Image 1 (cartoon, rainbow, N blue to C red):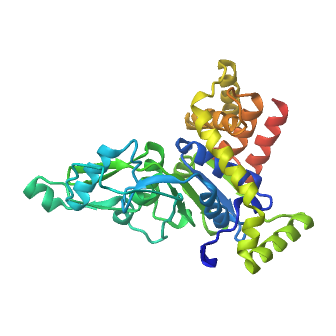
Image 2 (cartoon, rainbow, N blue to C red):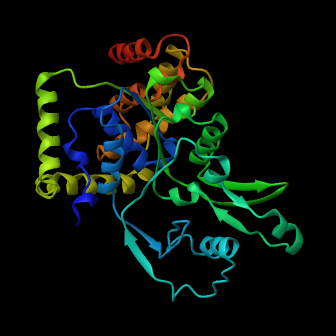
Image 3 (tube, helix red, strand yellow):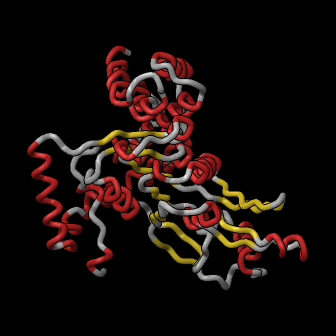
Length: 345
């Protein structure tokens, strides 16, 4: 492997435990609707996203498929979309090569237009010939991968709306003048932002499933460890990655096991009241917070190898799900209040 292709290992990132956990939870359960990472520059935000993709289990795809479909489950959709995009009428899939590859991180440029994100539909072709002719966009490329949006607060609000809709629904719809075409778009949405450069609208903030506020390490030991590890990686990337290979493989295995276990996780009804109690205590509006907390608690249970949610899962879920959903106090203060509530439950 070329030097330029080696990625800093996820397992080697010092600290930032909540950020790493939030990313892993969204990979185990993409229906959590993504994570917003708020923090100052130089706190390993982009490093963590690229590193996580590197340790995820490989996926199988059709060769040169712009939609990243899963051959086992989405063959009919593949036929339909390839016909719409390239006019390819595929009768047999046997001749099409299937390949395994790493999960991709698709980065969204700050200046991206809605057409570039969603894709385009040739209206003339649709009206004259009754055929849907589409040009796949970024959301097609992000299916079954990670969509990384740096400085999400600087994006056009309408584009952010489209991203969050797709993240929540798992579907992207290209529409023009009443003619529409849909394709799967299930991805892990990761947005990062520096609060000093402006905030997201509260309505958009609420749509991110999880949110973590991160800052640089304050302990001298941690800061020294960050310097040492980064220097070692820059000098000998292959040797450094080899050193962390066992830890990386263990992480991959644990993620695979959690993905398998998640559908089997149950929760007692009394714990649903515990979730609601957290949301009411901090004044969360609407019900999205309750629902995402439930999903997060179940995902935490799967991550920890358990089939049943316990109170500790709910307490940690509150820390990841609630702070950005409250508009009545500064975020920093809300985060502290959520932690305090954990202590009183």
